[in-house]
Structure formats: structure tokens, C-alpha cells
Image (tube, rainbow over the protein chains, first blue to last red):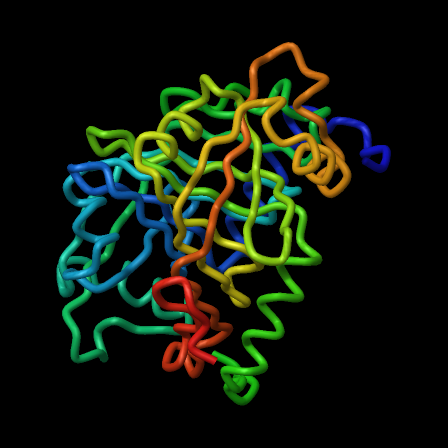
Length: 151
Length: 151
């Protein structure tokens, strides 16, 4: 393996995570059914400064899994610039929060309000955030615990 | 959303998927516990032309989940160059397949044989492969079904 860059400070990682949340449009969402079947899909999201909101068909496995579990684990960035977020999930029906729906459409370029299929918004409140690039950053990768930044 | 590139043909997508499997070092692995807790981690892998082999600590959630389920869903590439692979998983203990272990170490730059923690190799045989870039490629995204390329 090539020599990696020096490990970033916790403060730098937090800044990088927040910049990524502002900049990125898509993330990976893992979910599981009650009987232990894993699901993984990419979804677009909008970041409001504290929470991420995605939208997916109400009948999809991901929506059903997340609404059942009430929690989600999502990944942003590349596999060598990892941001893993665990959080609680709240389902928001279409029409319930017009400002959020507008912000989501603006940020993602797709608008579930215009589609024939019934969609649901899923709002994730981060409880735990980990961020690392190479092995030398595995230590110190926990940036948020219990919903609070550790830095 | 910007105008996307024209949708690729199935043949082109298959070539792109195979090239990605040769080129990429890491993927995202989703797994679930028996009682429906989802897990998501990045892992390095080696592609042998037909199967992907990853390695992770035997005691990790991902190893335990995949060995229980016998199947995995992994994602390669970016969220706008998606390759999703569902497949069957076979666990291989250290020492059982020396050639595979050497190929894994060469491809990934890390060698579980040298580590204090007990690792296990997890070999994924693709059964279903989907690939798409933008919305215009959702149609025709199924490139493999039942372990056979559809093209």
C-alpha cells in the first residue's frame, strides 16, 4: 500500500464531514428486514445542517425496513474517504412538511411530489458518525457519539 | 438535473462492470443480523474473473452476518456509476486456500495472515448484477440473473 497522508485531526475530520454533507447528493443506505435480509441502495439526500432527508417509494424494501427499524446506517464519500453515519429515522408523508419537500427537490433534482408512485421522506438524525481515509485514521474515527460531536 | 449521457447498451455495461471489478480495490458490504439489524462497511476485495473475495475479522458483525445469511449484497463504484451485486457467500478459513490468500494480499495491499486478530475470507459468487448511472439507465439495469449474464 502506498504511504498514506498523515492522519487528520478530529477537528479537520469534522470540517471534512460537514463539507461532504453539504456537497454530496447521494449516499448508500443499508437496511434490514425483520427476518435478517440485508438491503443496500443509493439514494439522494438533502442536508439541513443537522439531519439528512432522503425519499424512496413507500412500498420499497428500504422504506419498509427503515420504518420498521427506526434506525439506519448510511455511507457517504468513497471507500477511501469513508463517512459512516448511524442515526434514528423518522418517516414523513408527502404533504406534511412542504418546506422540507421543496428543499429536497432543489438539492436532489428529483421531486417525489410529481411522481405516480407513492413516496415517503425518511429523515435521519445522526447519533454516531465515523470518518476515516486510510488505516492510519482508524484510530480516532469516532466523531459523534450519542448524537453529540466529540470535538 | 443536468442532461445525462445517453443510456449505455447492455454489452457496454457488462464491459464497464468487468473493468470496475478488475480495477477497484474496495466495495461496500451490507449485511444483517438474524434479528434485523443492518450493517454497512467498506472492505477490500480481489476479483478472480468470476468471484470476489474479501476478508474481515471472524468476530466482526459483517463476518457473522454473512456466514449466517450465506448471501451478501455489495456495491461498487460511485452512487452515479452504481454496480450492485447479490451473491452467495462462502467462508474460507485462513490456510485453506493459500493461492487465494496470496492473490488477496497482492490485490488489496493488506494481509490477514500477518495479523493478530483471526480473520476469515468471504468469497462471493455473483447471482444478480445491476448497473446504472443515471435515471435513464434504470431500465435495463439487470445484467445478471440466476448467476448468468443476460448479455
